[in-house]
Image (cartoon, rainbow, N blue to C red; front, side, top):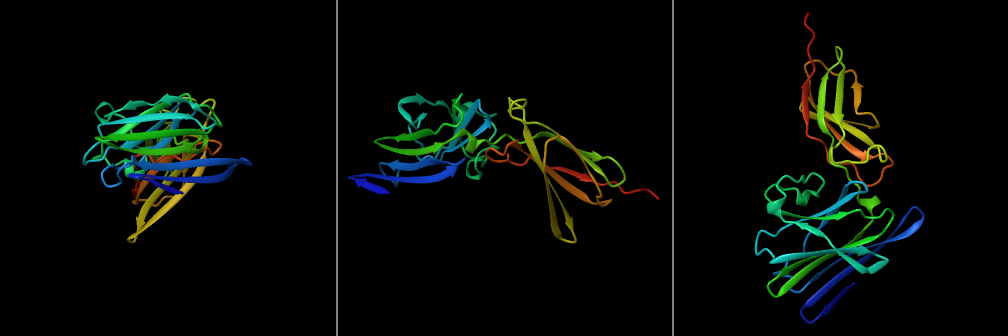
Length: 256
């Protein structure tokens, strides 16, 4: 649905889906005072520490950045109570990972803004509104989400691969340090490994696995394999993390 009032253009999309047998409404929209000179923030939200901390991020436009941002959020069914999102500008978050961001927001050259939404309720619809304010203009991104939909752990850490037997390999890793409630909300894992065979890339996906150590068998001596691991909430909430950093290992060749 679109409406135009003078110089202001508003575009709102209402989606309805079913989750757990109940209707769930997802609202997304953009409002811009001048489409040519006020870029809309490309906001991406995820919960890397369920359910304690939710983060949203968006890249700052490289050309004509806004004078400032305003970010607020509220419960869908109680929009009269609006809270300010804690903003972290790019200069103050150099060590923050972008691994859980969308691909468009994880380019190292981009300056990313973050906002932190602490202690959100479970099974509750939230609305976030991020407005970029320019000189005499503004541009807003409006979206709705539930924590259970945007759960996405950070990738597993310290992935290790080493020989176990003649043609067997052990893959070990550590849970993401940012996942704070492992006892209450366990994780499951998927492994991906690949190798090249006569110029053709071969890929194998394994999982889900609940342990952080697995013995894999029947690898080809002399071949080099690349291993990665991703983490997901045990009951399947949200999405699997981005893949971990890759680890290469060459299977030893037996000496005659």
